[in-house]
Length: 438
Image 1: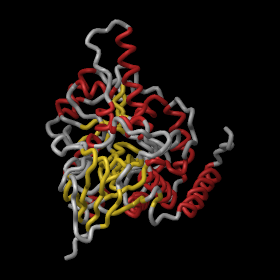
Image 2: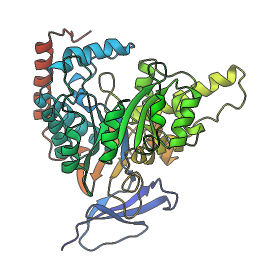
Image 3: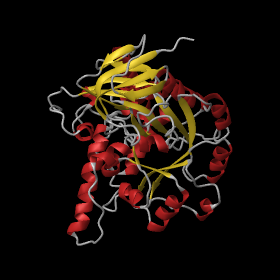
């Protein structure tokens, strides 16, 4: 059987793996869907050679929380600060009219926009699984896009929707998608529904819960042995009481935070959820959350995390608190956007670092842009300077998805036409008025 090889040659190699050295000038060899070697002066017969000179080669970014079904509603509510007003618009008004086609197009748009921005893995927090057909449409979009994804099936938020098909549909989905080597897998967006959690645990699924301390508490029955553990992902985790934080830490759950949307809705305060997790030895990951206010990129989330943590800790220091945590580092930020996200998805053995044997999820970033050069600190450049336009090449599982700054095998103009038609259908069906300059 012929082995397909790709060689990233002569780049600045940032591995994110302490056991695999970073290289000022080095190579990454890909064989089929795996990283075969990271080193200097590598060679391989019959390899496709990608000239990486003048580029940073690193693991793909991991978006650990994204409501990908909102793609048709991009920037619809940029100034919203009330969660329940937001739910009324995106769920009760527009989401109630989603067809499987709208689910497919929105998810596909979001997935391709993520790939374009160097995101190779995403946890898709779908709180709009209106029917098995809607779920299948979203999963088909993820599979066709080429991204690596964990699609979390959850009840739709609007009152018109039925969730009678849940959690019964999970077994069907698990048998189809959750097998070794599957690039797209399925979990449960279960909130705090104990019966649903038990079904998911029987199917060995990961379970997602959005958790805001002044809106929800962890009921005592969830302390039952085996219910809380590394299979759980808790998102937001803002203003959570100290005893609950300790319960989550003791159970080894995964924490994801969304710096921009947590600030948008006023969820967080200067206790700062990311810091609360770190203080307890946890490894919080970053998510984009929603496109109704932002774009599908993690660069903005990394910059927001860096700035918000430093602001929050300095406020505490200025108030005279003792033992205030140290300022965040760019290295910690980048770990949150790579290996920590892979861990949250249960994929830390497959992706998140440039480690031989792992899946070949690799991105290559230009350093010749006017906002980037000259290259000094590699990690700081990724966190503080690089943007979507600097993402030259994206590879997922050994397959090139973006090259020379362009998505491959994607008709962007056609996608624009289709998603615009979907948006117009949703606005017309719902009667929601949204002037262009609102």
